[in-house]
Amino acid sequence: MDKNRKPELMVMTLGGSVEPLKKSLSAHRPEQIIFLASHDSVPLSQEVLKALDYKPVVHFEITEDPNKMLECYKKARNCIDRAKRSGILKEAILVDYTGGTKVMTAALILAAVGNSYRFHYVGGRVRTKNGVGVVVDGKEEFFEEMSPWSLFAEEERRQVITLFNGRNFAGAVEIIRSACERTLPPEIRSYFQFLLPLCEGFSSLDQFQHKEAHHHLKEGVDLLSLHLENHPVAELTTFREKIETCLRFINALLHDTLGLQRFHRILLDDLLNNARRRIADGRFDDASARIYRALELYGQIVFTEATGLKNDGVPPEAVPLEIKDTFSCKYLDSDTGKLKLPLSATFEFLKAKGHPAGITFFEKMEEMKKIQSSRNKSILAHGIQPVTEKGVRSLFSTVWEFVGAKESFDFPKLSENEAAAFEKKGECQPKRLGS
Image (cartoon, rainbow, N blue to C red; front, side, top):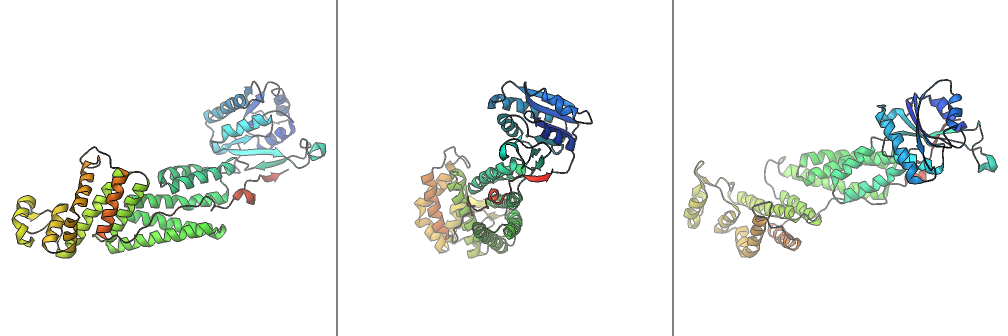
């Protein structure tokens, strides 16, 4: 937002001393003014306007009771609606909440807070009544950037942390992008800048888009490092270390799979940890599908390791003699002349070869049938029955042990207290622009 841009429209509360309003309008010289006024304060506008050496277009929204919040808020909303209908760009609209009752001021701020407007206040340190009255005429000072977004940004940050920790990355991204369209305290903006690519990275990783995940997470770590140079926080340093652990895992996965061009056991860890997150999120059918795929993938990997072949292109002559005729009848692809083996047949082949994976599979046949049945009955496969939490946890435990998964990890989480309290540093304080 261009803070030095001349405002074309000012929305102002009207009441009390008129000198600050005169000073504000004389300095900014907007083409249009929208006054939020009471019946008693409307006459003051004439005094304000007479002091100007030009004639702006003036509109009024009049509250029936300047001391009732709901009434003032409705009229303040009308002011903001007028501003929107004016067609003037948001950065050319200035909200001045100097005049009027405290209720009118609060109402205008609340009404305007959903928009990327600039905010302005005319105050001063020299006051009547031994410093507790009104600002002495001629001693006014301008304070700009007193945008309530500087205060609400901290609440938005807390919302983003909650969404991030709950793996609702899309929701976090939406809030961050919306917030970054407005003027933010530098520390909060820096915080959002590193968190945005991290949200995108973990979202990609959740969707098995490993290359995209690596790109976004690397960008996020670099921006986080820059943030920590200016705002060192112990919890964020630990958070960065955990992200770097995730990056090392992705690097290993991309290396071991030749850039996702071949099967490798590291994919089992990725699938099952993804399933673990789906369970934690209460998405049991999604978890069941991932668990089944891990079991299936394990069979494909072990089959290739044992035979040098893929289980969807097995020459009939490679099949052990005792099962050759049965397999040829069931699984032969007439177009290729080769066998395509489903899950159970893959492990039956391995059993016939004396491979431990095939032998163990049939030793655990009852558990394996439950996995297949759960998958087939799920609405995400062939049925309409939802998977239960108890059921999916049992399936997960069985497959985790069977495939020999090694690495258990979760996405790192943000601490509620890690971002420095920027309001304690005075970043929410008004900036004096001059007198």
